[in-house]
Each structure stands twice: as structure tokens, then as C-alpha cells.
Length: 567
Image 1 (cartoon, rainbow, N blue to C red):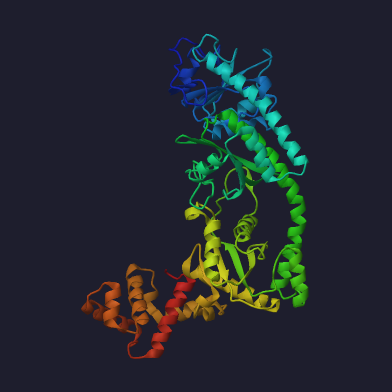
Image 2: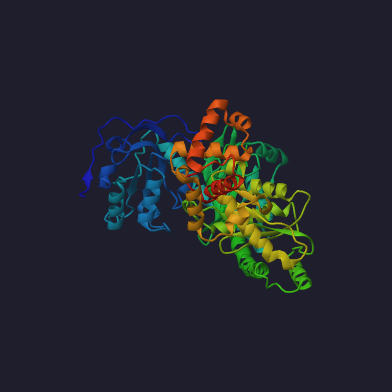
């Protein structure tokens, strides 16, 4: 497109109320086209993105540093120079795409070399995105009412860079001295104050530091759910800077090798957190990633040995009981006791991976979550991520299923929090490692059948399967479905009437053809139910007089439930 000059004779660009994040930079919302002809920009020339000039501008900011992320806002007019753009690490088209995703309304650039022009790829990307791109003679008019606030913002960004460099040096010294997350959290608290948490990507706390009053305030804050997990799946606890009444929270991803490994959270009630604080938290999170990278090098080898050992156990190749017990102790596991096998597998639903950064494989995330959950409840339990599932070998307690439900609730969080659903299968106990392969088969069967019957988030014990255990042994699905269709006939239809009649039949069989009790459970009149019984016997045969037929009908109904046929 052809660059065009824009006059500046329109009414002034009016400042709005202070946002609470420093000097007033908000403005009365107006189309970008109107901003072009206002008295804010100096000799503006629109060079690309003309199709986006209808975007509304409600905020103005100066980009004085390449890492502008914490200062970006929706509806923002961003002012910068070609020198700053030249220091970007990411490609210019990726940078513009990031601005567009964050809802930035336009970009104005002052060329430090008046004879230069913006790169063609920059104009092409702006045109493709419909993001207005303007060249100006100066960042803004020095006589404009917003000039002082924008100059202060620019100075604050530069100050934040120097402060972040100092913080980074302090934290790197901690890492070089062998410190881990706990030591880093203490150091971040020492520099920034407030309360500091380091969590998993889904918000489970790994360590924390801070004044006791701040930590107590955080514990009751809306930033955490009822299980103590940071609400990373919600607006209040997601990445960025957020306000919760008179509480403030800054959250940054801890990313190593492009993989999301956790969150660094800074919580404050003593003073409002600003964009500069978020910038410091993001820089601290980058140092935390060094700890992750260091631990990954060590743990990857150990995890491979652990996974191979458990895989051999599940396949019956672990060796003699004494050898297995001794080897397990080197990993901190206690297998010299009655144990059960618990299998956790993600439910087969559509992908819901978040935007950048990329998260580690789902099974690994779930294995880490269950490792954390088990640690405080069974210190000798073995937790391992295999190819498609997490396997736990845990001790038998007075109520094993209650413990399993506690673990699931801990990992799932408050109401699930939007996390990927998973199914759980639990085996019977065994006193010897020789029985582990059979237990693994039981847990897999419980997981598979429980998911078919219950759906997402199923937690199933092998002993609770009843006749479903036998039905699950039939590998030919077509044979089971054929039996169900031949037995139930038109009741297998996928219609509301057929489903209603199947429900009536199910309760009748469960009450051993007790008409009065069935009518009570279904809230039918006694005569209405007798009419339904007559209708059912016309379709299915005289099941009230033939126990064998009732057995067939009961099995057919269970097959439909297990296979999800017209459920």
C-alpha cells in the first residue's frame, strides 16, 4: 500500500482517568483513524495496516525496551523507535503478531535514521494482520498533556531493566551456589517483599517464602482455590498482573527449552504491583528455569531407570522378591509390604493445550502431580510415568479407595479447574512382587470398564466391577452388541421412548419385578407401571415368569451401558 501523510488538525487526544499503574496514560476511546489526525503524533505517515484504522485506541504507551510484554494492554497505541525494534530477539513479523494477539491497536515508529525506511517484511506483516503501522517524526508531541506521563513511563521501563539485571545477578549467584527452588523463593522474597510461590503449571505449590502475615493473607485469598492451588486456569491467577480487591498478584511462567514447567507467583498487599514488578517477576522466572534445566539433566537418567524397572515389574520380569525389594529401596520405594497397583490414564478428549509456552507431555505432568500428592501420604509409594499412563505402586491401608480419592481430588483441584480429565483403575492387593503383573491387569481392566460405564473422571476399583469384569473379557465388541440387540430388540433404538423404557426395565430387574417398589422409585402410578410391564413383555417376552430371560435382559442392559450404546 502507498504511505500517506496525515494532518493534525483534529481535536486533541484526551487523557482519561489514572489506571493505578503509574501516571495517567488511558485516553477516551476513539478510532485509530482519529488518533492519526490528533495533536499527539508528530507528522504521522500511515505505511501499513490501513484496514485496521477502525480499531479503538484507549491507552498510549512508550516501548523504551525490547521486552515490552508486561506493559502491553488491549486497545493500546504503542510508540517506539527503530533502534529499540532493532534489538528485538524475535522476528519482526512474530513481534507484530504478538502485539495483535494482545489487542494492541497500532504501532508508531520513529526512524532514528531519517533516510531509512521500515523493512518490507514489517509492512507486509502489518498489512496481513490489519495492524496500523505509522512512521512519526518524534515519539509524541512534547507539548501534549500526556507527554510528561509518557516520558516517565519510558524512564520507568529503563529503570526496570537495570533493576532486573541486578536481581538476575543475585538469583544466578544463588543457583551457582547449588540453590534450588526454595532458596530462589527466599531470595525473590528478600528482593521484592510480599509472598512468593513457586508452583507447577497447574498451580500446585512446590515451595513458598514470605512474611507470615502475607502468607496467611495469601492462604485466604481468591488467588488460591480451596485445595491451596493457585488458580492458573482463571483470569485471577493466569499469567500477568492482576488485582483482587486490595490484593495484587504477578504470575510468570517458568519455561525451560520451550517447555512450561511451572509458575513464579508474587503476591502483595502492602503496595500495588505495577508493570515493572511483573517485569522483575518474569526475569526471576527465567533464572528459576536454570534450576529446572539443571534438575532435568539429572532426573531424566534416573527417571529412565525407574520407568524401566517398573515396566519390568508389570511384565513379570523384575526377578526374585528380595532382589526387587532391594532395588526398589534405591529409588526410595517400599515394596516389601502389601501393595496395590493404581493406573492413571488421560481420558480421550480433544486437545486443550494452552498457548505458548508449550507444556511438557501430559502423562509426565500427571505423574509429577501424583508424585507430589502421594509424597505426604505414602512416602514409600512408587510413582512412574510410562508411555501413555501413570502407574502407582502404593501400600495397602485401612481404606485404600478413600486414599485414592484424596489423591485424585488433590491433583484435580477445586472442581477440576479446567484440567484434562483422567481415569483411574485400582487393583486388589498382593503380598508379593510376583503378583504385580496380575494386579496391573486388574487395574487396567478397572480403568477401561469404569471409563466406559462412568465416563470422564472415573475412579474404579476392580472388585466393584461385578459382572462387568466378565463382559470385559469378551474381545469381540460386535458379538456383545449383537447379543444386546437380539435380546432387547427395539429397546436398543436411539430414541427418548426407548431410553425411557430401558430405564423402566432396569429398575424392574433391580427390584426383582417388585411393581410397587419400581413405581415408587420411578415416580409412576401403580397402574401406569403395570401397563408398562405389559408393553415390555410384548416386546421382549414374558420376563416376569422366566428368570433366565431376566438374566439375559440384565446382561444386555449392562452391555449397552458398558459399550456406550445409545446411552
